[in-house]
Picture (cartoon, rainbow, N blue to C red):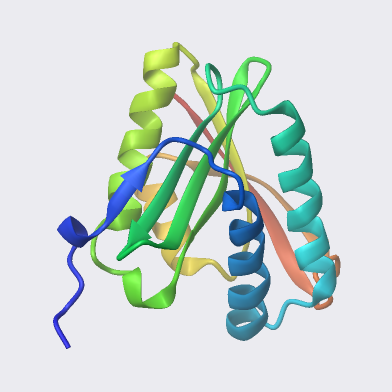
Length: 166
């Protein structure tokens, strides 16, 4: 089997019916298998996606839907929140990690935020997301909050990272 390369991935910025449902499925499935999260994590993701769908404004928000051979394999969502942007739903199927896709999307995301003239970005994650956290901190995000939680059906530390652009 040929190694998957970044050039094999198509990225679209148009939100289509079914995309958010698939993003919810990826989160529920992957985080259950990789982190042991339960059904309450999927409920949390579904609630956030419902709110995003209802408030979605393509002139302020942006999606990056990653596809390979016609199948969604990852995503990143920029959700406008007043004077700041929240980075959300940054996820890839395991076989697409390590090819530079995450770095590419985060760079495009920061470019989008700069283009909009917004200076503040934040994201919420958990302590277990080592690879993503390494990317965030490399781009200048700093840890601003930690809290103990059992919201996802297991004990963990939820984290907030912030980045202020100059």
